[in-house]
Each structure stands twice: as structure tokens, then as C-alpha cells.
Figure (tube, rainbow, N blue to C red):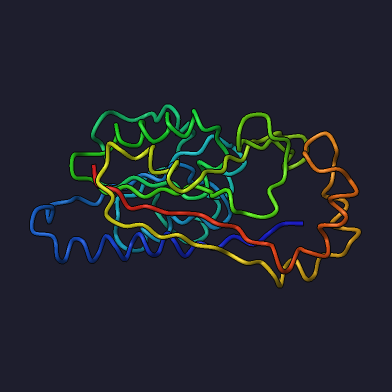
Length: 242
């Protein structure tokens, strides 16, 4: 089962940029060069910035995701600079971009790699640049996977690919941002109740595997009846100034 993805926080980032540039007296000279760290996928949000006249650049570690994004941009006649790259070691020089963001990319990193990625995003951002990033919060339910480190849960996605999902307490997340000025903060809880309502018990149990979860099979089955009342996916998003 493939859960839906909602892109609205990226629109909020664009709206913030527009308002910031309209009213800021000190940073009105920001350019238009933007980097998306994790730019792949079938509906890449970098297309939004391309439509609004930005000089768009993107990296992604996955060839499959890059191919999907390239197909999208070709079909929509968009000029976007895509390349393979790891946000933990961004392949660009210091102070290259006016805007840098990630969206639902860091969640697939360990907490130590969160730190590396944030440091890299800051490195490639120009002084005064605006950055956008988010953290998955621990009050998400259910959290699937095997907890190998505190709030780092490993599970299999896309067949045999083993990935981590990292979750944070809200004050913990802000500890990663001490080198920035926080300009905007947006805590969002998404409910996929329609989606979960369509999930049968059989489909729910097919998601279970005792080699990647701290739940027993009996506990997982009991959780099925709670799925509509307790399900939530919580993130906190920030716009930051370097």
C-alpha cells in the first residue's frame, strides 16, 4: 500500500520567501538560485520553483527517483539541473545557493546524518540565505520498524531496501538549529483516516514482520481497531536564515 504524500509545506516556503523579500529591508538582494536536497520522485516540488522563475538545482541519491523526476520535468518542459548526490556530502562549493531545502528527505537518515546534512546545507548556502527543512516528531502513530538506536526505526521499503526513519522530540529538533536564525516554524499533524479506513485487517497484517518491529504480532493485530482514532503523522518545519 502506498500512502499519499502532501506537498503543501513547500508552497508555504515559497509564500514565505515572497513575503520576506517584499518586506525585508536588509535582504532584498537575494538571488534566485535554489537547491533541493532529495529532488527525485514522480511529483518533484522543485517544479514549483521552476514555474516561478527560479534557477533550479536538485540532488538525489537514488537513480530511480532521479529518473522519475527527469521524466516529470521533460513532460512539463521544465529546465531543471538534476544530478546524483548525497545531502550528507553535497557536491557544490561553499556559499553557492540563495535558497536550500529538503522535504521528507532527512527523515530517512539517522540522527547523526541529520546533523551532517544540516551542516552541509548551511555550508552551500550564501550568507543571508533562507533554508527550509523538517523533522518527523515522535508523537507520530504508528511508528513502524525495529528501534536500533533511540527513536531510529529500521524497516524495509520498496522490496529489499532497508531504510531508517528518525523521530524527534520538538525541543530536541531545535538543538540541531543553533547556527541559524529561526524565522518561521510550522508544526503539522496529518491524518490519513480515509486511507486507513480503506485498509483491511488482512492488509494491516501484511505490513507486519517480526524482524523489523518492537511489536508482537498480537499487539499489531490489536492496533488495527485503534488505527482511525490514533493515527497521525507529525512534522515540524522551519524556515531558517543563515
